[in-house]
Length: 259
Image (cartoon, rainbow, N blue to C red; front, side):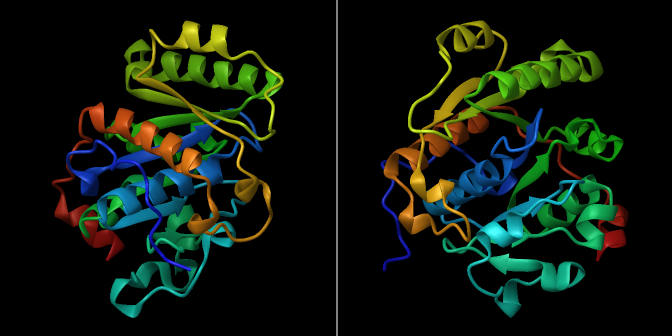
């Protein structure tokens, strides 16, 4: 089986290695893990650049379990993450929950990865309100808010977005992407009025279609994904590429704390 999946186009991201994005949700089971995997995979396949997906959840994420395809090559390994790293089927790196990724300021982790010229996509899960994430948000990391196409999770997503506005200002939503994950073949919710209400306030609204390959348990192999799924994630990356670049870390002393 080939390692290359043809996607219809590369994402419109001028400097892929500078991408820093946080994938968050207002409730559990919202597909933050598969969305993190998907955005990072589409960026890797579409640009060929180094991409790292990081489990930054506070309640037991399973990003590493869902995406570990093979052991990480020694030349790409990062000592501080040790055995909590792996490569996915597309060749991107994934960092699972570890004392470093869990206990350190995520902004410091971001600076460490940035110094290696790798794009970063963080699975935050439901930890959006955690104070330790504030520096990463304030540094300019893009926000990707995910919800499944169901009434209750969509309601909780709305509450999460209200909290974002109250905490970081109304303009925060202008740099926020909403991704709706279809976890069933047919949506039980009419998304048209939700999209119409959100579109004027946010950077982009993207729907990821139902994909049986994502619904199955176990490790996700990108070669089994539908082209429409990859296209949807690429659409989200297009929006991300239109946003202002995150702040560049200048403080090498802070990088040294993680070395």
